[in-house]
Image 1 (cartoon, helix red, strand yellow):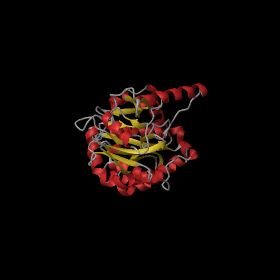
Image 2: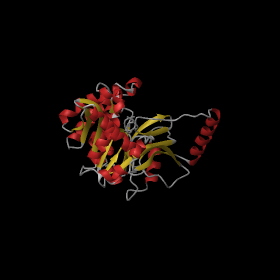
Image 3: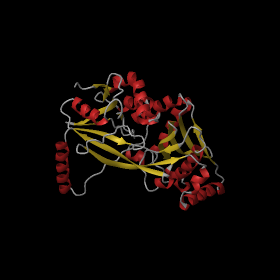
Image 4: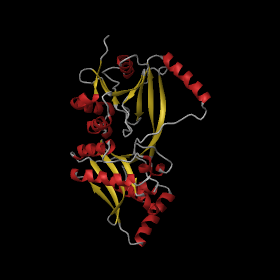
Length: 366
């Protein structure tokens, strides 16, 4: 039986395949997930992709599967994984188009060279884009991190009363401190397309002034990260699904959040606050005001972060779930061999090493 997968340059061909991608995403995920939207994926490819990123499509229209791929090293491939992308940029149905496991087997054999491993990164069990389950001897799950979710299907006050006494006390304490010093605070929503690029610049200034600026990982309007957010937000704003929120003390912006909406969810992509104002906890106040606002949005049923749920972030959570990777091996013998090598390396280096990425937004500590 001939292989049904076609491989082509993602940067060159994704724009003309975007409608097929959107149709498949809606079918596989069961909703118009913002992170699977061509308006999110397209800018990622444009600003972070390279000529080496491939678009794999199964069948002419991609109805049997579509995956953005890049080679990690000889024999090892993975789904496209820019550091700003907190989702799996691959879609493989498990239905009348055939078994997802069979599709993955075919894809591994279609890859250039002799591929022994294909990794699908950052899978979300609530919106599972790839299901590989029939060959446990050839697949392995690698946990990534937990992320948090907040359903908005009840009054905000009910949600708020279930938060810890410490969190509720902190909000009251900080609000009272501002009032005693005659400082007003308000949350400002910016949704007009003309306002978003300047708001990204303001957001960037907040990040640049803090630890991300020191680390060189802050959003910068002059680099790929800043250009991506401006481009992506403009596309979402064209249909009223992008907003940047600013918490202002009097007229000064002290915290900001970049968000997109769709599929009944509000996704908080990035959060920054002025660390010089930490005595007033602008990050906590920002999230309190933003959550309260989101509970009143008729088109939002859940708030998603897609960032690591740190202990402090978990105080906002109603649900936690584990994001994970799936490694799919060409043959079971390859998985066994890799496990032998890993065991040997752990014995030589007991401390090991971990991986981290700027994959989403954390609830701020201050």
